[in-house]
Image 1: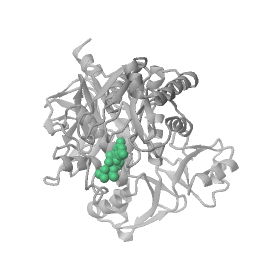
Image 2: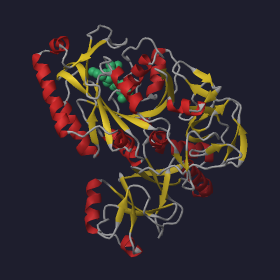
Image 3: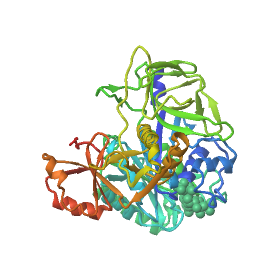
Image 4: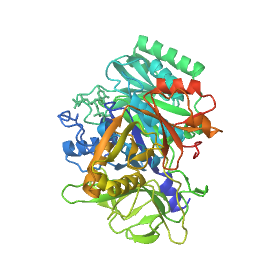
Length: 536
Ligand code: G4P
């Protein structure tokens, strides 16, 4: 194994996907605790008042006095180098959240045991699933009353259409779980009761299911229930198959409590063992680039302005896809068509921002960006020029009609809208027969509309008239005959628009309206993203 292959084999880069309040911040903090990056975790207090104002990780930073960034966290565990990507939630939810998933090799889906699969989890799951990303499930908050584990497993399978394989099964009764049974190792792990409220690593005892001491510790009733559950899972459930996990068809499932640390370590260890190392990436020409290709390559997946209010900095985050990164190296910026020296690279260890000396596939580096990069840009070696495939388009859910307040500012307005669309901040559509004096703008998160208004005013000197439209669903449409689309039936409460490539898209209020239209137009295919649609 070459040095590069060795570094790759030890790297894990993943994102945690969840609905707000499922416990993502708490779990992240506990992973840092187990990774030794912080020594004392505490329940995050007094965060409610301003929890929507800042990103979750900034909050950890404030509360703990440690410096992290809202984009990526890195720590070491048992010889692994772990990169956790933040997927902004709450009000920050936007295309950024989805794009982060492009930089990940796997995802951890965090589910609140009392609430099950929630809307934001579903959306994020869908993006991962479409990319065939391996997804690991952690059912959280087992320290308090929740739904039955079988029920939750069933819900995941029915609602998300993915099979689940519980690796750890909780032992005990609802609200009083005492340990987990590892179905692969066939081993029981019982957790101590401790008084640290999860601020320290939780001690546990492991043993064989047939060990009399373990049997006694579990108690007769719990033991009998556990055997019944194991039998049922073995009989009725799926077989464990890592190839299906890698293909995103089977989700390994774990149970625990990020708050008390119950089940956290067994999850982390199994996850590191089973999750994929940095994976090959697709190029625009259809070729596949392997991470152990010696030539350096990376793509920009996120650009963050003003990370540090003290200096107005803009940082571009790149995910390394192949080769070795060395500080000060010069790389070819494909979209700019020139060489760039990566002079001040930064990496984000849990403790602090550090200057990077070297980095490997799977690692994320932030570099100060004077405004030359856009999302999706490729960086590579000069002698081996490549380009990664385009970033996917994500289904917008919020729509607004925008036009300039002052018609004399139409030129600035148009320029601003088109540039922001190129940056990937918004998607633009237009209606036929309306001319270019107004656009329909589609975004993923409502904050993006505010950002749009602000940036147009400040950067392009164009004020907007912005009317939010009552639609939440967009579908690209495709039919053999263009007439079938132009005369689409049942669209009384919706709108037919065209994207920038003149591909037709229908906007409707909700799924119910969509089904109404689906039934009335059997010759039309509807897709969430523009895969089959063609210009008409
Ligand atoms: P998020 O980042 O996914 O939005 O969730 P976060 O970690 O902030 O957790 C949301 C709430 O759920 C917090 O409570 C947190 O303490 C609680 N929580 C997280 N994990 C667990 C768990 O395993 N068990 C239990 N019982 N609660 C958990 P809060 O009341 O909003 O804040 P606080 O009063 O605890 O600070």
